[in-house]
Image (cartoon, rainbow over all chains, first blue to last red; front, side):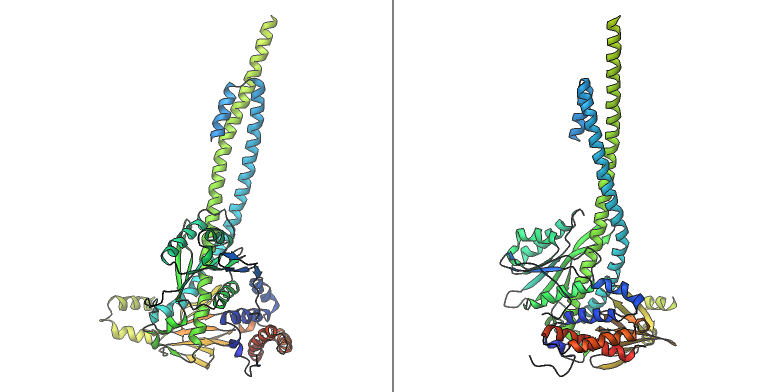
Length: 69
Length: 292
Length: 157
């Protein structure tokens, strides 16, 4: 994959919602300390997801806020 | 109830030793009901404290979701007319992992089955282990994704965004995405409801969409994706509020039932104890008179 | 109170009150600014709102042409009379409807003064390092973070 010249070419690789999750999280980390503690609480994720094929569930994987496809 | 009648009948007729055993049985049973009542009461209190928080989160997500829906309404976005190829729809059926909340999960599953019976070509995404258990029995082959671990606390945007992202990554061009959730109606009522999250192509075809100026081509694509996340969050938050409220009500009822039983068993216990004392007195008096 | 009254009258009898209704509607911009977990403004009457969009910064006044804008990381300015409030957003969408209602749905937002400029700078230098990582996922994530943080560092005090 060629390196995009423009930084905001994130769109080529990931979806808007993944962008939104990453952008929101980094923003909360830049808050002043007293505001940060409460704000970053929403960034703890315990969601697992599993793909299904023809009635069979595969091994569940954790969902992560990352650009990992 | 059955055992209650048995016990009281037994108490009246039983011999002294039998009555002693029954008395202890009643005592043990009474203690266990009291413990159950303590647990359901605690669960009720825990649920109550979370009800307000859940309701607040739901209100915010409603504002957020309705703002997004506003544009669709203004532009008069409608589901596309049936085309030659059969429609391919996706149902996102959302509740949670935990039970003890009345008919929250079963009513939603019933509604889902009703829709799916008319839309046999549809795919399904399930959120929550309870919903997975229900729908994997009847519609396993249509399930594409399942999610668990959402709804312990009020649902967050991150959760919704990542669920929406996984749906996008299925790579299927759905004609329509229908999000099925329990709408919070009041503190005693909820209602399985659908929010539609149409794809960009449907939005662009809306009769009044041309009223809006758009700078770039991919704006609608991103908007459709973002709104899918918004609507999922909306549905999750409504469902969460409905569930927490239903759990509080279920636990409140359970505590009340337990209290009723505690009352009945206390009376039975006292009566039985009285019978034991009477029996003993009779024994003593009979014994004494036989010595005369 | 007066305005809501006149509005409801204009809805009930549109023809009679038309000129009046248009005059009252056209002078105000109604702002709804929502976050996933909080509504900052609910149909509030404001003078002007400045938005950072993918097509550049735009100012929205009453009677703005209906539009849908994708927001980029930057400052949203809400001007209410002589008062101006600044919020930093990482992105989202804004739409102006034909009846002068501006709906902003942001991914998240905080008043500009809630941010720590030094924290933002630290995070930025780390993200810049990761942006050249050979791991594509790490690099892609870092590039988004650089986007957000560069915009934030430029305005945070």
